[in-house]
Image (cartoon, rainbow, N blue to C red):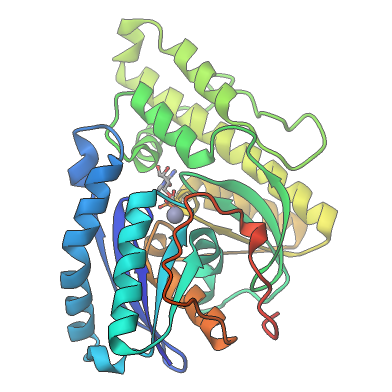
Length: 343
Ligand code: KG4
Ligand code: ZN
């Protein structure tokens, strides 16, 4: 089976080809960063229009690079949600029409299931069951995973997602969008100990998160115009903030390992590209005799490969959508159906 994956939930147009026996054949990504940069964040309408423009040339290029033709494709998987409704509808309409034209099935994939399964595309994939730390621009969740579609929520953010907090702090520091990687870069030159950022919700039991207090803490440090433009002061804020987010996530992951007894932890989503998080999570895992898994950086952030792979898993189990296009801007991961036989 050859699955064409299409990701258009936000500001990246991603396409990929996944083969049931040969694995990932190739993928292409077009990032809209330059398009949205002037606005300091994603403009949904511009995102939708750009997905319309980029999808066909990207797929054409992908097929050429993989020496495949449209007639070789046996199913189309697309991101059905959660995400920006217009952007989702572009991918959904495109994928479903293509599948209809080719007389093959289409399947709508949950974006976070895509992220969650992305580490499976790497050389030493984790075996089920495991704990997943999902950290993206819209989600921060700890999930107990027993198989594809078998997800139990252990905890989640009560306010901002981790990536969202990174992006907002980046804005306060007048860094370019998308903020996460910029804050991480600035943090490399900073002293994380200078400001005593809190580790929210770690002093009480439970696996939920809250990051909005860290934003307020940052804002209070940036009241003075002179400080705000002092390079070392800024770098120290970035480092302090990053460590506060990272330490909080590491503490909660350790707790999840201890509570569940599971010794495998995967992290996925844009923030899992953060090197400090990887470093501190690895160190914690060594102490807990646990194993940490994550995707290569390009598959941590949005991409078509994870959608092709997640779609393949569900198609292989006999699932498919009819011709009605599925686009769900809000869609809890725990509503997904269990994929039988894969656990
Ligand atoms: O998974 P993703 O590409 O899109 C969503 O599904 O939301 O995640 C994007 C988020 C953004 O908030 C971005 O700032 C953050 O991931 N991000 C990072 C890093 N790379 C991306 N945050 C911290 N450190 C990074 N290196
Ligand atoms: Zn994402």
